[in-house]
Structure formats: structure tokens, C-alpha cells
Length: 156
Image 1: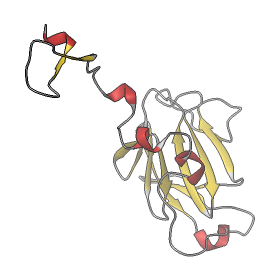
Image 2: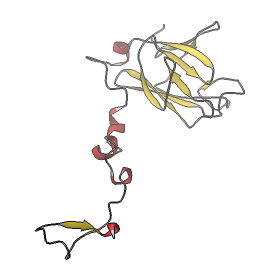
Image 3: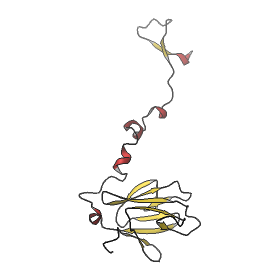
Image 4: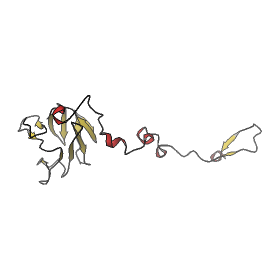
């Protein structure tokens, strides 16, 4: 690997390695992409590869045939050196040295840190308002003698 590159994608099953020449790469079928994969099952703009904190991340750009890391479908994920990246049905191994790209210490979370703040903690935990059924309004039941007894209005 030369110093001017940020790593490479090595096709599994043969073929020339694809050099990763910039820290932000658009991968797809269109000639305007940074990494052009001329296959019918690759979307025009299939995925984005980005270096963040010394590690490569992949983000699926709502492609038709998806992205997998180590045979697991992903929307966005950190790529560790040696991970298998599948774009549509085309498999690659990513080869790079995190320290050469600025990594210090243990690997960061799979999801880039800036994405952690795009949703509230309640949303990320699945506890946001949209995930709950409406409970109905409550009112005091005057026909019930027990103190503090509350009956739901939808129980009428």
C-alpha cells in the first residue's frame, strides 16, 4: 500500500485491488462516482465510504441490492481492517491501517459519533411517543365508592 492511498478494496474471487484515494468516496454504477462498479445490480449511487477517526465507515445510500459487512446487511457501519464488504453481490475485503489514517486508542463505536446525536435518547432506546399506543383519557368514576379509584374513559 503506498502512502498516497487510504487503503484498498481487494475483490474476493479475483481482480485488481481498488485503491481508496480520498477520505470520502461515492461508490456506484455511474461514471461520476469515485469508485465505479459497472454491474447491473449495483445502484447508480450505491454507498458512501468515509474515513472518520482513522476508520473507514460504509453507508448504504438506499440502494436496491444493499450493503453487507461480514455477511450482515447494514445501513451504516464501521469497517475494521480485513472486514468483508459486499456491495450488491460483489465481495471485497478492506485493507488499511487505522493508525496511518489517524486512529488513536481502541476502535470507535460502529456508528459514527455525529450520528448518535441525530435522534433523542428515547428514540434510540425505542421509547419515543410514536412507539406507544394511546392510553385514552382518564377520569374519576363517581359511581365507585373506593377513594382514588380512576376509570379509563374508553372502558365505558
